[in-house]
Length: 145
Image (cartoon, rainbow, N blue to C red; front, side, top):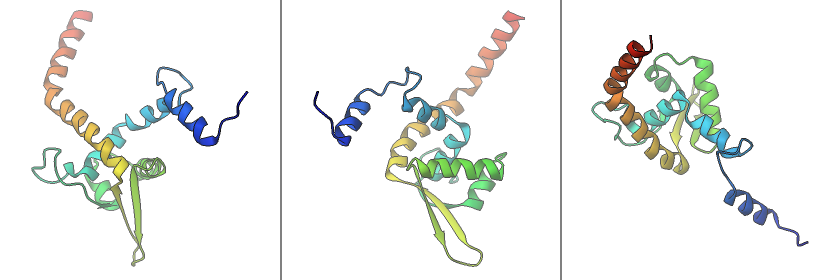
């Protein structure tokens, strides 16, 4: 039996990623990126927070405090945890400037920008089709009850 190098094992595992399999690591990644806070952070860093941007503004860095103000309802703990997980996955880069007080900003990496394109479409779809979904829910609820 031939032995495989680490690179060959990674290549074989990558070819075998299948999110329908419970143990596949891609399933955990899907769980992470489908989180509402991840979606909103990605949209904000991708430029959707800019007035009149309609989800198509220019990506750029944002300070932690800017993100906290923009993302209504997010707790400090949840924002910190989500940003850390995105940084760990290589989707967001964190920059610390040693000022008084310390300035911390976040921006999308190249990998994050590639995901942002997909996330932007999902966010836009939700905003455009919300009335349809609400009408369908109402129809369903009256039919079922």
